[in-house]
Image (tube, rainbow, N blue to C red; front, side, top):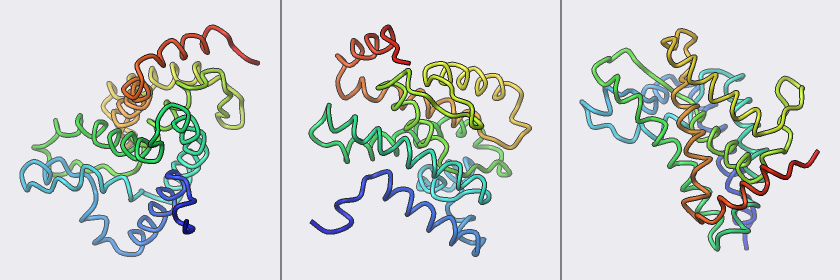
Length: 209
């Protein structure tokens, strides 16, 4: 078994994303080729952008926040998957990239706007966070260093994303990607094993503090 095979999917995705983003920081042409452009996807058939936009970020803050979340929650989710499927690594990748694609669907409504662009791994990262919440809803998530139960954070997060999306996205954040990625991540374990719903309900009704 080589070194790469011993690394978790979350670690591999983090390293690849950091490397490509830093490359893109130094070469604007990379951004132009990989960024999500609904206009280019639909009218120029550049379908790869639906996935490749997740490997580039707007700035260091954007990159660091997403990668810390991906790695920290991703390791836990990988361990949870190992308990419910015989292919935990494959299922992690399917969830992550499935969430990126799913969370990009709302962007396609803007296919006639050549100026609309989006980038970042937020759809996939949100899925990882919400998969972790599914398996351990009362685990604490630290928001600006303040502890918050995962299930409480999840509900507030979805409400916030929905509200901000309706405001028109004037803050240059793709709130739809966050919202739909989160929903995908929460549902994905049930696609693997529907009986996990009973597990979630049990965890939810038996909080551990």
